[in-house]
Image (cartoon, helix red, strand yellow):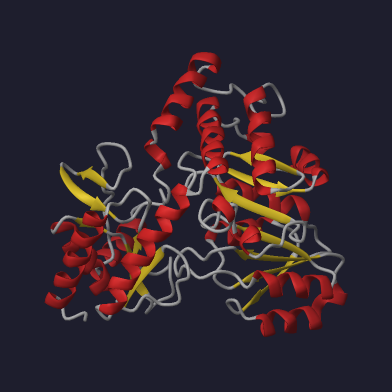
Amino acid sequence: MSFLDKHIEDLKSAGVYRTLPVNEGPCEAVIKLDGREVINLTSNNYLGFANHPRLVAAAKKAIDTYGVGAGAVRTIVGNMDIHERLDDVIARFKREEAALVFQSGFACNAGVIQAITDKDDLIISDALNHASIIDGVRLSKAARAVYQHNDMADLERILKTKRDQYNHVLIITDGVFSMDGDIANLPDIVRLAKQYDALTYVDDAHGSGVLGESGRGTVDHFHLHGQVDVIVGTLSKAIGVVGGYVAGSKTMRDWLLHRGRPLLFSTAMMPAAAAAIIEAFEMLSTTTAHTDKLWENARYFQGRLKTLGFDLGVTQTPITPIIIGDETKTMAFSKRLLEHGVFVSGIVFPTVPAGKARIRCMVSALHARAHLDKAIAVIETTAKDMNLI
């Protein structure tokens, strides 16, 4: 494996080599990172559920009842009543016929896309879709095409020229795009799908728990219930635990129980995680306080940064990219911020296109105004010192 040494040296020469930070406690607004306290502006813990007392208590109770592991895949003996309950809770919350929980959001895309498409089908995917969608598409036998990001004219061009060559056509998009924070043009995607007899698939990893009524997601945000065929989401971001889900028809759920490979060949979700997730959805179903606080913090933080002259790109959500462009400067900026007590990850190629490097700030409902004010002050001072603004 010595050939990898050169690749590692190339990363170091480019200034983008990194070592993993080590968080020594729960994922909170302030964390202990490598021995020192810093403001956490880099997690996906949107609502602060990852260490919420109600979720912790639910998980502990489930361990006493079920133990720590499911013991098998769901199709053998790993399908516990708590897993069935969780599927039902998610389906009701998403206002869909049925839902099915996978071990992760990545596993959903790896398992669902290949299960519902075949060699005579076509998958049309947004150019900025998440890596898990890209990998899921690669696992399918279907032909594939890519439309320019959120460009409905380009999507229609592909549909016009290719639709009659295939049995089924599946249009796949992120609900919220994780690196830029913009929202898919779902109403027009659904309109085009109906016009050209295509299926729709939305990966709502960053929309679940954030957009829509009490965080019901992008489909709810656009009032498109019953008009999107496949809705995928994660349970590890706003929900704060682990896992992913697919929501849609009962027929689709039944088929995935027979052909969803991650379900067939990987042990089911830990029961403690399932219990904590059920509690999270119960909390979201009874109050909007968590999503309200998230959006309040996001609007304040983004407004202050825009006033200072930072380029936040096209974000429409709490995802807050500060576009730097140069990859070496971006990583140096991230490092300097950490030295001054603010942890924000640098995002560089291949996660984003070359020349589009940024730090990505992730505000949560956990942050107090004092946390945000301190972080903004550090970001401003550091950026000025580095001639970034």
